[in-house]
Image (cartoon, rainbow, N blue to C red; front, side):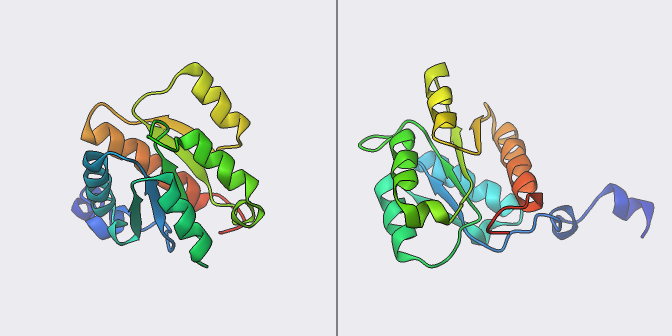
Length: 156
């Protein structure tokens, strides 16, 4: 491989080590965030795997009706009707959903200290704030994908 190829990796080579072969589930009530995450997933080479849900109820229905084991759940914390904390509690209360062992990560615009503490009390696997820019958000999300693609868990 030439030095030029090493310095400027192709899109395929750049993301070849993100080993994702299952859906990435995003739960967020904001349409703009849906569009941003879809674009980020395309940029990271995992665009075919993103599934978006407007509400936690939609996600619960999907998880109950699907035999597939998702790669990860990314959830906003502040949503109407059923917020992210309530959604996580519902998943924990349902033995079948809990046994799927899907990594559940909050990815939110803002959060109070008490929300973060409660999230970890509900056994989330991470809590991240969205970046102030597209690139910051993309970098954080890419780190999450790298971590979970390398991590051993019941779905790996």
